[in-house]
Length: 107
Image (cartoon, rainbow, N blue to C red; front, side, top):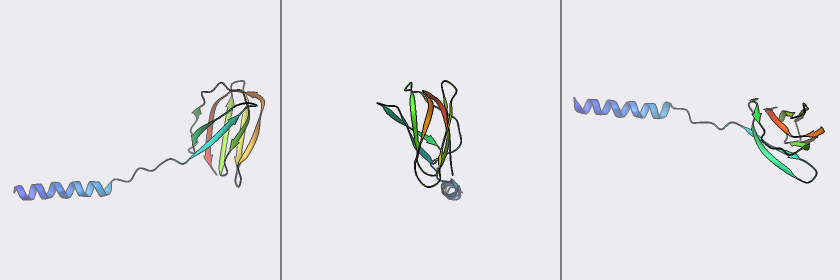
């Protein structure tokens, strides 16, 4: 009886180990925010979730890699969209301002 119980427990643990899906990483994109004399980067998940941006730099350009569609919101109300299918894209933020949030999706 003990042997059966131990064998059943081992079989159950083995089955559970094989049944658990491997964790998958969320695809992401590195976005560059630039001003005249400085810049910074931030990684955004490509799941459409709104991500806060905590940097006071007054940005005048945003660069996105290919295959992403991103929208950024500025502290003074600007909405800047950066999207490209084939090449990285740099867009102008007008008027220049700190960005407060952004969202990105894969295209």
